[in-house]
Image (cartoon, rainbow, N blue to C red; front, side, top):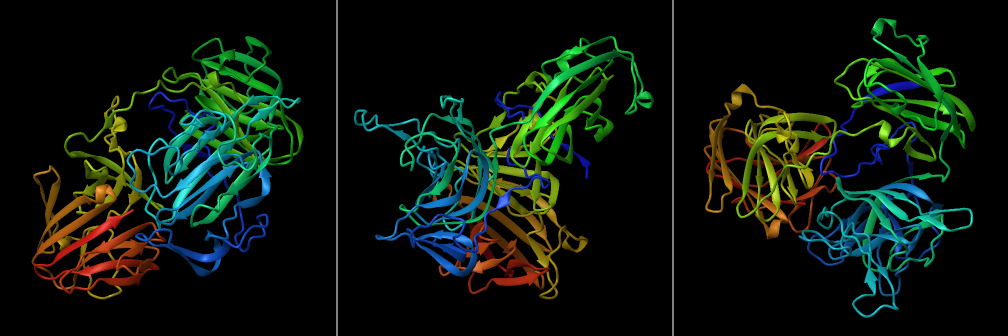
Length: 626
């Protein structure tokens, strides 16, 4: 069965970096999905010590060193070492190239590590709030070690993450790894080093195309061989894991052979372009590569490439095309991508079943629009084949690299008005009246002036304004840190009953009026507005070196049944210290004493909300910890 679809992609290379032209690594392809590692028990791992166990939940204390508790059930892998039990955990399968994704939770002050092939360590550590991470911090590629070298020089080649994307202890963090094993010839001579193609921590790329010349310190195997098992350290501190998914790849790759091309000249119209269209061939021949460079003209051409595609194993294969002009893709004479006009930004994909062996391959491209560059890209992905190009790299040229336009915070806070693209779950929108605030402490946030909402916050660098200010721009900027998406709904609402749903937008009855903002002595803003006849002063300030943002809402006057929504999520769980864990342990909320006014946790439409009743002269203050 075959199907095809479109998806919009961007090809601009900001920063002048080398992009992985094989596409977005770790992007989920439901037709060739990753496997989930069952955590019903420990049967998917080699025998280990009693420090490793299966639980139904994990909770780490934000304030207590190495404190991690478990709940009954299944689905969470937990390490609870003590003086006698510090065993490592080895997965039950070996791997060469692999994509790996998982969630992990660190106890305060804890330490662990994930060894790919049991040799190359990606560090796990409670590095929350550290300004300048090293190779030993969370997400770092640990150093190699040579005892024969002088003191101070034994450790070498450790690679820190690009930025510290680590969250607070007790929160679930998300890690994605695309790893490429070292390559050897038939005699066992190494041809290429192991490589971390891409590592993403909490949504931030922290490594890309990083080579490792040999096993890192503490590796189980001092030599280099392929394949090998994943190993997790068990001797350094409590840590929990869940949602472990992986996809392994073989060392053999699909190949094209017996390639031929035939080239014809335009002009032509879309009406005359059909799947079986014959055109006058003015040039033809054999070619070693699938490339648009076989076309001698920049425009008004039609070219067909044919050949054999060899795959080593049977299974489902997904083909992707990025082509400028009308194009058509056939495998074994069957149309995978029907004739259509596309640009390279309109990636098409189609999935089909292939047997092991040779298959006929055909791709047709007809280009008439001079504003498009000649471009031909065809990619393949399979159950044991990482997405890879069948074309030459030069056949799919990138847009010219763009030097980034970054807004940094230096000397005083920054306040920037720009569009913000907000996505949470399945919802997305462009916030047109956004104000983003960058603090000297590195805790940054965005407010929507259209409704007063605290939309998002992030820690680290401030804004990438390249989309806004490069060329014609589109008016939006992007946060440059791991971003906590909060919500873009009104802060206040009148709720006649306990089951009244919180509004997604302001109603006329709210009579919302924005009154701008004032700067304090440090240069940070206090936003002012009125809603439901109530005057509000909204002040958000970084605390604890940027580890938290404290928001204070001063209210003058109050409508009947007026509430302030503090948080919303899948669940809201009260903690022993009076804080709340929000939305499956995504962040903490710590409420200040509100003069006897008690918060309300309610469930509406299978979601939970943390609300504060608003009374005359009430001041609502809470901290967001992430």
